[in-house]
Image 1: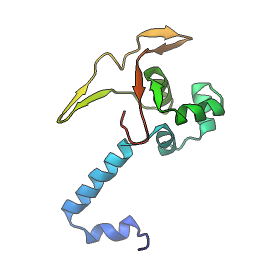
Image 2: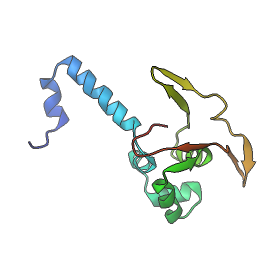
Image 3: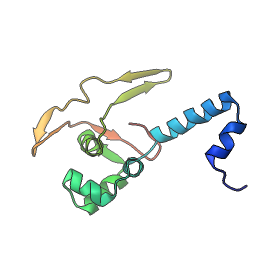
Image 4: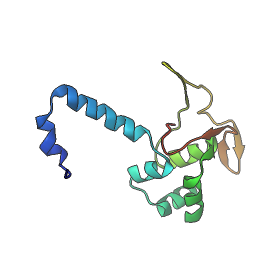
Length: 125
């Protein structure tokens, strides 16, 4: 089966199917790692290195890690123009953790939290 352009397919689908596909695409965007996030906003590792004041190699190492400090994630996401939000999932309940987004202490000129958060290629932040 060959690839098809969305513009050629969408008019052949019903409204319900289009909405379902749209929700699936939105969820896929939410499930990505740091490299995917960087690519989504069109930045290279070298661009990120400049934004977070690290070497390109350090950015690469950060993207490959499976366990990150919350402060590292915050710095990375904020450099891309986003904001960190931590949500705890309990089956049918999603709870936004207050106070986690806010910085707790100042370290090396950067406000940082000492919390750690594990992420992978299929987790949400």
